[in-house]
Image (cartoon, rainbow, N blue to C red; front, top):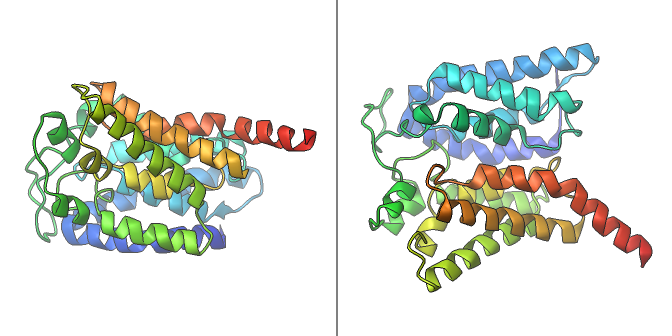
Length: 298
């Protein structure tokens, strides 16, 4: 039996259009990986919650969906399974389950597989194609890789997600719609979304202004990779994010800035968003404590 959670249900609802368009482009690859990710994710939480006499939370469905959509289409089933088990187990259950986890489970699982199996995860891209039940496994460079190589990108193709990359992270138009829905329904923090986006854009502009050799083009870099996907869905996780108003702004500034720093100066990890969110998670409770104390003194 799954414990209902209205907030998590709204997040799932916002992700459904992205999942459906992923099915249109990736067909049975998505369904195939979905089976393993959801089965092992729910099973892991069920086992640990059973010992405590608790029910599986709907939050695990959100974690599974976010982790799934962040995977490259050619990810082997066993890597996807290991990743979600690690994320739910070490990002959530070892801390006592839902509401007590300091880290976002989907991010923890994603980082685990990207570090442990980087060879698989950074070569799992396929050429963008029209609908096929099992698309041809023709490898293709992602927009971030193309930017690193100095290539020009088509902004319209970036906006509509018509490029290689992780399955659900490139459909900018749907991510923006989801972001508006989550803010209007008070499901996601607009403070975190705004400050993450603002800091990422500003720091990218600064690096471009000083013409750093490794600096990326501002507009293309923000629309490439998982920046907006992570900003809307993962940075705003209500459990692992801070609760105080000022803390949320600082938290978002940290995530956006660290993302751009890693993207600009790291040669091994061109993305940076997952590291940035995990970094922010580490300081979330501390930020709340600092600003709570300041308010008490006043």
